[in-house]
Length: 486
Image (cartoon, rainbow, N blue to C red; front, top):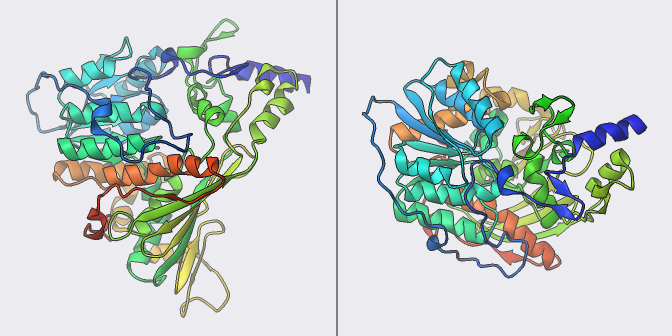
């Protein structure tokens, strides 16, 4: 037990948590703007309309490089997620990386070293103070900027990029934390004409796309009910100082801005918030199956949260009852359950579970009048084709209904991250850029999927009361066509 305690004490970083609670410092935030004063959605009285003027960035003149026909990419935030995006951008012909931005030296150096392996020109580097991303946007010309910074900086950076005239902006998940931020993404995308894309890679998971294909071809009949979620034991990540990626000087691990761990910013949300803080991995594929924002929409949500026990228990079990972190009150319930009602009658249950010991699962269930798919167990049942009351293995069905993106790009995706879905996602985005099409997962999707965070916090705070879901499309959902063509 004593050796375990010593390891734990080394592992948990004071840059992530203080005895009285977490504090994310400006130095610990990669490539960010100034600290936002936005309501983060943890109170029940926040705005539901938003304003495009809350996070403006004055357009400035930029240096226009000679056009060589290659798509020009920029990256804000250079952690491991950025490096995966770089892999996939450079794997697609006629692309180049113009500039990268980060205020943290360690991740930036690692990313530049990573880029050097591709035998391509080194991009311009923007680093220094917290406004470096604004300088990059003002000085360079891009076809697309990808934002892979901590959650609270996604919206300020996306708004700045759109207002700077970047035609395509990719923002990592979750795209927004409050309803105000959701409306800002919609309003600024509409007013500038810049295409926002939420980089939700699970929408491109092979089984999810095959299930979508089956839905579109009517195998499950009329959809009735879906489940999904983010069920992932993140206790190690929430108390990780980045040892795996950081470098040492003697026996002293460099903390704070040199740490490479998500604990720098992710754990703060577990202290301050109580709701589904990370809904898009689950809801994205389900929303596509239900044609949300494209003939259907979410209309209301109610949520409840269990007591908060897992993170405190993890600290005590590994660091002892006297450990200073044992005094922290974690607001996030261990399991948060949200139920959503859709305009076309369907119901959806979304589960957030990151503080408990468990295997990973997104818990997909797509159920209609004639059958269903459940990814836990990899089961499919289609009435009239499956043996009565017996599951089929989903693999047999998914081979037949493999989405065309996967069947045509399987070999190229084989070496990409997350089973290949990261490459498929980037390929689809680049196809939209080259053909000047709307993005596959646009500002309305980013807003509707991310709004679950704020709405669940509101509902939990009100004892599970149902709250109305904003219509971010302002009525356009009735006429918009489904995405991800089969």
